[in-house]
Image (cartoon, rainbow, N blue to C red; front, side):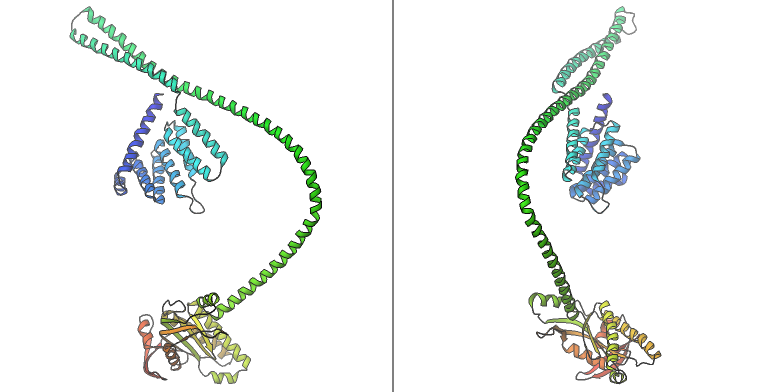
Length: 530
């Protein structure tokens, strides 16, 4: 019993300064204190930081400090601190909730904390009850009713053990008070005898010898009184446990009586129900026979109708997807969505758009050497390759006009001209043509050399007309880009001076001087070097 009281006092003295520490010190001060702390004191500071971050709502940081406290308490073999750290881990995990597929289980931390309390004989009933209450909350959250009932029984047992019988406690206190008064009187007598012995020291007074014997006798009585107090404390614990066992037996007997009464009532009710059910089933069986034929027929018809409807819905969805994909092949996604919702679209002004024109050199002479079918096939091969390159660089194909190919950057969301992406795409287009033409030259087929021109500036973009929708762009920027392409050379990329100023730090370019462009006067032009 003495050991039990000593451990309880030690646990209380440990928790009280920890609570005060965490309440009176902010997080920065605790982190400063953590640098110089070691051993049990470091565990206390880690738990104080856990509580501080828990109050601040930073559950990830609180969990980190709680886990560090548990690890350190285990290394220094302090089971009382480890039980408290595991309890804090469980509380933080429960408040934070699950994160990820391999989330940690708060219930396992709480059960391990209680297991340590039981093995070490720790009498921290407050921590034990707190763990049980949190386990109960988790069981309620997960709808585990049987587990809730089991935890309630554990909480009841913990509370009964920690609370002795009121009448027995009062009796023990009165007896302890009486013995304490006797012990105080004995102590006073011993002090008086000691003083008298000191006064008679060195003499052979027989009275002094008698005082020695009397003092020895009082000391023996005092020791017996102290032993009686300890024995009464042990008896109190045994009596409390015995009382709890008797109470549990009575509760169990009362519960069994109630269960037996309930079983009898249920049996009587079952007999009455069986009689009424028999009559009901006879009438119901007749009704079922009459309705079975009609229900079966209705079920078969409904199933056939559902199958037909499902097939029609699949066809409708397939056609809808085809229509949407076809619309997205013709128009940009933003414009297509606006057209579906409103039935029309509004033209938009874009301040910074890059425009690319590509045209094949000597296309008329090539057309004379190929049949119409071959010519269309070759153009389709080139334009398919251009489409893939343009899409990969996040650009927008506008249209094809005969052997001319037009694309733009910065549409339809107005995210900038994307000049660097457009020049990279133009380079890939010329590289693809060079590889393709090398193969055609080996087969002695006519080659396709393309002029590419790029310019940037403001444009207006939108859809015009009510039939055969086509997304297009207009403005002086488009006209200049067409003139720059016409002034270029086969296999090269020709850009305007405005484009050069924006990409000169990224691409090597060769100045061509001022070149006359139709209806635009002289324009600075540059070739992008491969």
